[in-house]
Each structure stands twice: as structure tokens, then as C-alpha cells.
Image 1 (cartoon, rainbow, N blue to C red):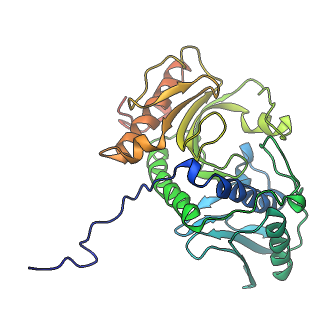
Image 2 (image 1 turned 180 degrees about the vertical axis):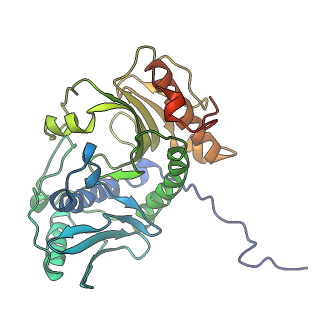
Length: 316
């Protein structure tokens, strides 16, 4: 009898469990750490439409800022969730790192700024978080100090799967579309499609965020979808989809799969992560959600689908 080798053994579910209750303290801390680094991107990267210059990107090991200009040099910062290190690297091969371990936001902030100085990058940031109800300045935040390596790695593993499917979804659209990117303000991985028309002025009102940020972010009609670990009105990890402006009839439309629903408080369609994770074909379940919510937005919003989509790109 032949014993299966490592290449023939059953692999673990590539969509790992990520119950919010099991890592909410680490999640809250990691959210603030990403905001610390994100503020660097905001300070260094040239402005792009909808604030696309501030986002992170999923890598084979974690999340990266990608290259940012620093004078006539470039610097990139990466959260590595395999080594559990934050790496700072420059185009002239200067390097520094900060260990990802249980430590307060205040300690992480000081260590990170020291790492930037070590690679001779001088940057001034506004050291206060955004898009959160309670905005504790980074240098004073000793409340958030948890880091569970396994949970952080599982969150990143979820993002690698979501990123893969969102890239497939993005490839079906010929019109203006965002990259698949991570917004550290809300800690979500998302992709957005645009009709090509300007949108009405956004009302703003996001906690600890200037209204002009939302005005720029939602300057044009869009249909957006993504993943976030949950919190607030949704106490579990979930996929979301929304349209801005929301067309009439959107909230009562039928979307797939069956587990998806419209959340009146968020004004978004929600699909619990576990409904995808436990599906017989997770990729297909997620694509159903992405496709069907987009089609509802595009049809009710009178988008020019013939010009914006690849032929036979949608199954709805």
C-alpha cells in the first residue's frame, strides 16, 4: 500500500474560519497599525481620483503600500503575515523592520517612525485615525495592544482568496474600474465599477473623516463590492455590495446566492463569509454575489452595459 506524499495529501480549506469574536482585539489593533502606515502613503503618494493612491495591495505574504516616492528615491512598506514583520525597504537598498507582536499602537507607531528614520525617509503624517467612532491619537493609544499571529495570518489568507476572485470579476469590465485594493480606513478589500457619469454630492458624515474625503471618493456613479472582517451592525465577516447613488428598487431586488440579503442600516447587500466558505464551490458562490449585485445596480441605474462589459461577461 502506498502512503500518500505531501503533494497528494488533502489540503486545508483555502477559505479559513475567521469568526469575529475569536480575534476582535487583534483586528482592532491591526486596523490601527494599518492606519499608521496608511498615513505615510497619504503623505507621500501623488493624488489620484477617489483616493486610490492611499490603498494597499495583497501580496503573496501580506499587504504592501507598493513603491512610494521619497524625494528621488522610492520606499515601500509591507505587512508580512508569514514572518510577522513589518518591512520597510528603499530603492537604494536600505532596510528596517518592526516585529508584529503584542504591542500597543503607541509602541508600534514609535517603532515604525524610527524604522522610517533608519532608512532616511523623512515624512510628516497626521497621527490620528479616521473612519472610526473613537479616534485616539496613535502616540496615545495604549488601548489596542493585541496581536494573535494565527488570526492575522488567517485574515490575510482570506484576503488572498477574495483578491483572486475580485480580480476575475474586475477583468469582465471594460469601463473605468478601480484596482482590487485594500482601504485601511475601513479595513476592507474592494473593487469598484463606474458608469462614467458624475454622481450627486455625497452627504459625508463618516466618523472622524472630513466630508471632502467622501466627496472625492464618490464623485462618480459606482457599484462597489468587497470583503471586511465585520463589526458594528454586522457581527461576522462578510462580503458587501452597494451602489452610489442607490437607484430606486435596488434594496428590494433579488440577488444571489440565497444567503445574501439587503441590510437596511448599512444600505448594502451583505453575504456572510461563512456562506461562501462552506459552499460546495466558494468561488462560484462569491461570483454569483458579485455579478448579481452589479447587474441590479447597472440595470436600475441605466448603465450602458453593452459598452461597459465584455461580451457574455455576466451570467445575469
